[in-house]
Length: 103
Image (cartoon, rainbow, N blue to C red):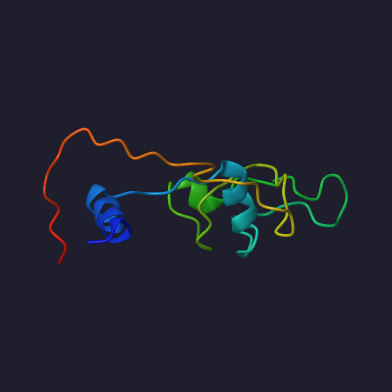
């Protein structure tokens, strides 16, 4: 079996998940509809929150599927995402030897 196939099976078996920077999550959420009232226009106050959204006060998820919430929008949907995830060489160091069944 090729090493690439074994690695994919091992990653799936271990339940690997990637990581993202908070700023990238906030930029990504800017592509979704707004879920709170904010001051309009393009002035310095444009991203400021007007009032706490009801869904947040009721401890419910955002109605627009945003995953993050801030009282000030520091980024826009057009901002460049920062490098994130695995940045550099990855070393897999086995701590035990076992069999991985591939279905």
